[in-house]
Amino acid sequence: EAGLKTAPPFELIVLPTVDSTNAYLRRLVTQRTLSKPVVVIADTQTAGYGRSGRQFYSPRQTGLYLSIALPVDPNQPLDAGLLTTGTAVAVAKALRRLFAVDIQLKWVNDVLVNQRKVVGILSEGVTNLETRHVSTVIVGIGINLSTTAFPPELTHKAGALLTSPSTITRNRVASELLETFFAGYPMYQTGAFLPEYRRLSMVIGQQVALKSGQQTFTGKVLDIDAHGALVVALANGEQRHFSSGEIIKVNL
Ligand code: BTN
Image (tube, rainbow, N blue to C red; front, side, top):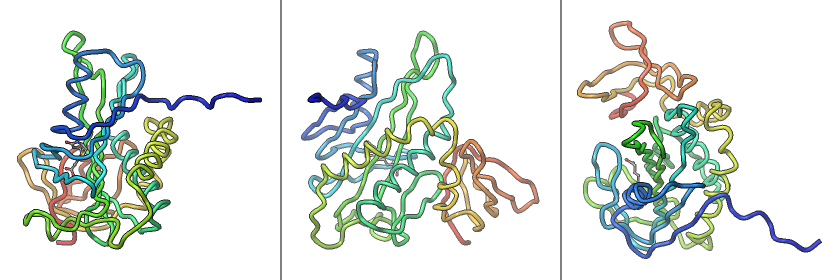
């Protein structure tokens, strides 16, 4: 029987250049209601950004810069912590399959290879002004494929997946990533991927310093909870679940 395979479950937009693929989708969702996810891939970003207002270095040709806008069901509150950690697992799986590398996750969703960050993920909620609910979530993923010359502040932290010439193209990485991401979609609100997240986590059992809000905390990471939050035994004996924050030091 001749026929077409099912169309991809998303709309795809490819741009030669953009300020930021996350910002692009933010603008798009204020203009129209999404009936299905929209994916934007850009060759380069002039104002790519990361967590805590940091820039995300996005040179042409050596990286993959992609964002996914996901419509949120208004009747079911979204567990953002699970979506974020679930995305990290999807990215890890896709990269492991393609590059046969050992991946480690640094909470919440930095992806590391050989102790260096090769992927940054940034999820943002867009709130509908009338209903005041999050109507769309934008998940931005920046992958360093072969960038080796970094701005000075990143030299000791960032790394690349490819250190020698490879036949793996950027399009191949994008398609593997999107396939893995959408295949895992049903899991992102159930947390079925959490055991895998915990296995890949480099912080469980470690002493860390964590910035959350204006405060810095130190303690030992005990676990990642059922919502993707970091469970820390603080120095004062208190046990706390952090649903947001940034680990600034591991292994004090
Ligand atoms: C971080 O490590 O702090 C998150 C970095 C996220 C970077 C990606 S690249 C594609 C998308 N567009 C952006 O401006 N940021 C995300």
